[in-house]
Length: 212
Image (cartoon, rainbow, N blue to C red):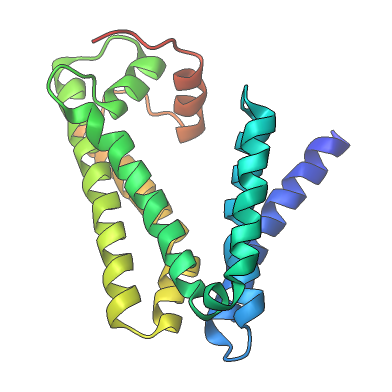
């Protein structure tokens, strides 16, 4: 119980603290080194985790070490353009989510939200199946729009404006999308048992993939 509480507090601190620190570095005129360090930290941490879990751990850790040496050698340029690293992180995440939803809309595949719905409700009615596909389309378009908005703001607006969007509006917009979809679902499918999103995630994780 105590370990779970500590883990929750650490996650909450990261979710709140990292965006605040990132925005500070984007807003401050004298934070190039700090900005580069904060921008690179998630990339290096993720790379370290993946390298450690890789079956070729030694080789991957060696590649990571060489990458760190290269980053150190080019630190001056990195510090001058750390905002670009922030943008690449943000857009990469949006595009990964865009492709995660979008590729399931290809003919012959099961839309992702349909699989979520089946994991919770079992076999779906034709109306529910059609709705789930439309929700998958909506999420695909949402993440495409987020990537486009992030790109336009980064290159056409001041860095601080983009930073507000990236650090303080991204998660609320995703939350709003969840709330809006839930409201539409209750209206379109009033006779369906409505569940919490976490129930869908748990059921989805516990349901083996089926070929389609």
